[in-house]
Image (tube, rainbow, N blue to C red; front, top):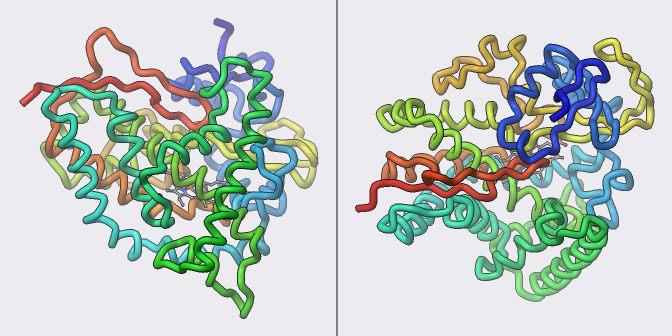
Length: 398
Ligand code: HEM
């Protein structure tokens, strides 16, 4: 394999599934040798230093998120609020933030705990499971569907829609088909939520869908299209990222038994472990931005109109911010990681995600403290948002 990153040309390939399985050494070479690298796929600049990435995230007037046309995700309009810049974006956050507050999300804990145990009941006696399918997908996805007011018996349908946009390559071997799948899937997502809005109009419920239809800011309700554009994003954000983070976290713990034992023996480390694994694994590896003005960063000239990637993954392994960044330390004192982004677009669902991750990791280890990757098997990761799509685990059967 060619040197990755290539320090002479600054080219880096982060889209190889083998790199996705273990990207941290590549990140650290980028930080040391080419803090503004160049994607080997499309030549787009990739910014990796913590200081630069934080600065970019906090300056949306220079690093814009309004780029729906440049990033083909099967949408007909920008997704709200992610592809809108402040100040318009701020209006949407004022409507959405209270529904995702820490206090509100904490109230979901007993329900998520019960669901985690019900799932574990199904496979614990077998002494093995494929973690993604058996636990990492259904636990957060069902919690999210419940919150939205969407039927959990249709989970497979929602996952197909989500995968058709985020991972169309999992649905076809023909790369020419990828964009066609995104466009078709996009249409089906709009159509699904069109029907649901009509349903809730005649039969309001105590759920997020109904809230979106009734919410008002400064006397104005959200328009029909605004609700659709929020729902489109929710489907992607709510059904992928926690699954991805949970899978990466458990894969790490399966492969690092000393760390796992430390956690099992001392549950005061739980919150620290969730944060540290978010930092080290950073499943949402990067976020795109559109440059609004010419700037020079790390000695590289970047031009207005260029699409750039802010590498959250690399910045989270930067020794300048984290000291000993390569040490995965569940008792780390200062952990201002960027796994949820920063600035105006910082993740709306972070409180929900943290509660799901904490409860999932806690309940799993109470009941299955001693586990490993099935001998002879290798977990497989997807690139982009890093999900361990195949994680076969074994433990002593009861
Ligand atoms: C561990 C799980 C999660 C991770 C790692 C994660 C990561 C992120 C990141 C990095 C951003 C910033 C995007 C940017 O700056 O362009 C973001 C934004 C967002 N996330 Fe999450 N996310 C997670 C869970 C969730 C969940 C469960 C939801 C469910 C509602 C959600 C909804 C959103 C929304 C709506 C935004 C856009 C916010 C805005 O643009 O104002 N996320 N997330």
